Length: 161
Image 1 (cartoon, rainbow, N blue to C red):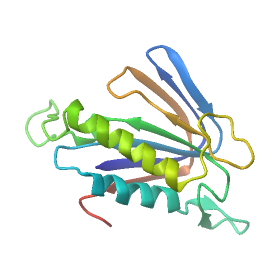
Image 2: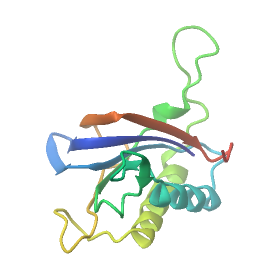
Image 3: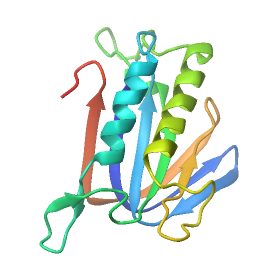
Image 4: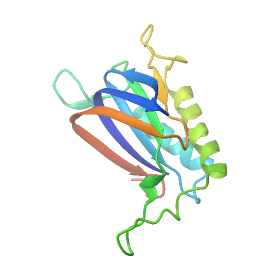
């Protein structure tokens, strides 16, 4: 699995022309799933995202997690993260998992994040809990965001760095 994690000051998601949610400070996570991915990848990445300390503390150092700031989370599937551009100018997506494999792993990643973070079922945040907004696998989606910092981090579960 490959993730692109962006620290944002705000973001919104539209799925098939309908609003799926808006958020203030938090993380937007784009997730690409390949054929070789397993539940172990979903578990490892959920742990990394939930504990990632990339928000500024009182000294301006990246030392706080999503939970620490009571931030929001958006998770959107994006098979194009596994594009290969080695040959020619048209990307190949042969490594991207087919829906029958990718959808259960996408859902598993989201479920694991829900278990690791104090997330309510729907936005807005209540009582210090972090809302989560999710996309619909394979749908036409538009993500709007304001990257804060900018901070963008790429994590690949096959590299474990």
